[in-house]
Length: 246
Image (cartoon, rainbow, N blue to C red; front, side, top):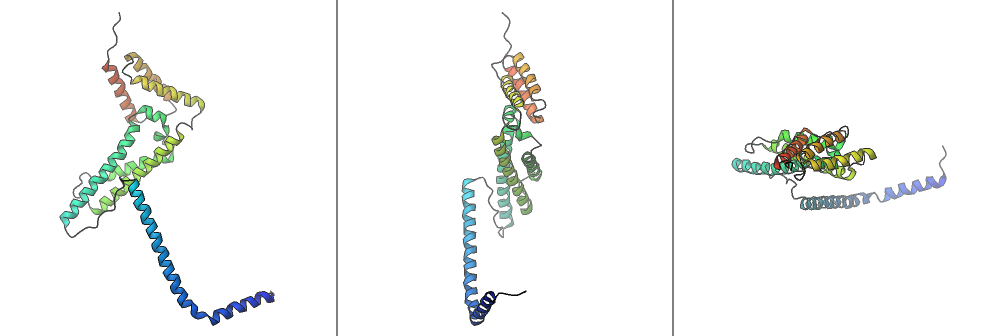
């Protein structure tokens, strides 16, 4: 293949320059090395600042474990404090989930929270199961490895729940047809009547049965939700006697 003379000339000029000024490689390499270290250090500082801002915005975020000291008793006490802190985080996420699981009306408003066809719902339920399985029976005597695994599981549970909840609140009942949304709205109103102290026992019982029928085929309520709802209905029924006929 023929090479154009102009191109060949430029190549010769570059090679000539490199041959005459090869010694520039050494000072320039030092400059590039210093610049690379500075860039890396700046990146690390930016990362640390972002992490500090995230911790300030999320005070419940578990802190990094302290380095062990030479005192075994002090190490055990420190790990026990860390375990109790992670347990409080665990309980807080459980409390948020129970606010859905034990409230049929809330689940009707945000049906994705119990829809196991949704990957985000499955992810947070799986993360919950993992965190529950790693929760220590007793905070005392937990090893550093066990604490790290438990901390990681609870953090994953917290994040997975927040993601699922955010999406559930965004989509609400948008995945249902118009007729299905009307049924959900009817069921929501019936559930309100079923636990209303101002309604009669017959009204509450009828509302409860009708609500279950409206939800049939739309939402599968967890067993805990049904049990909680039935207790509320039974409590409302027992809270106020039927008016005696005049």
